Image 1 (tube, rainbow, N blue to C red):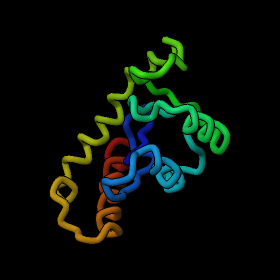
Image 2 (image 1 turned 180 degrees about the vertical axis):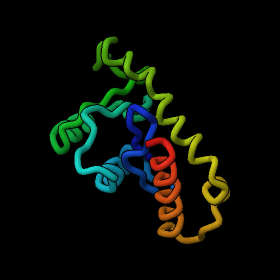
Image 3 (image 1 turned 30 degrees about the vertical axis):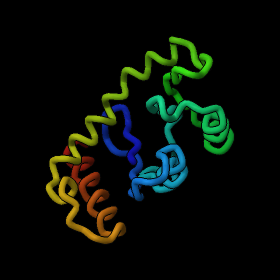
Length: 131
């Protein structure tokens, strides 16, 4: 899981198993941020649309969550905020940049700590290249 800036540079990354839902890993990802201050808004997909997650992010971190509504829920966000969802391609571009590194595409590391180190190394190389 990764959090990207407006310029698609990584702000925070986290590696975990595939079984927990991404919304449960959000606290760990924000705790492993590369910067001292957190972003004001997070843009997520439909899986992040939940009232408890919205309230927890606002209460604990002061972060506004922007996610489109699922089909079976009432509308909780207006169209103005959801226009920012169109900028979600920026985090997808970060994942495409991380796919340039062969060690991340094919996971050679058996241990999670080693793989997380390689992901952070890839993020560092991206940040040095584009800053």
